[in-house]
Image (tube, rainbow, N blue to C red):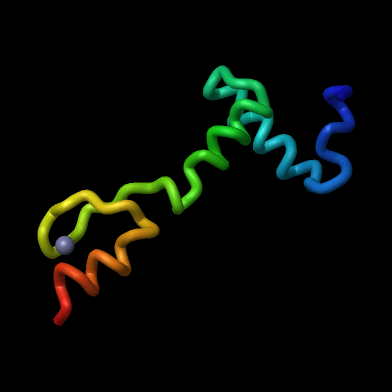
Length: 71
Ligand SMILES: [Zn+2]
């Protein structure tokens, strides 16, 4: 895909420039940067429980709170 046209369908030019700038800062291609961002989605994020300090997946946090800290 030509460098100039990759954003034109779905992304505003200003957003595209920002993404390309971010990618350059990290030494990644735009494709690699987007993949990195996608892999950082909340479902794969780990949170630390503020009550017991255990690390829990973000998606499992509601379950953890009900199970371990019922009140
Ligand atoms: Zn906890």
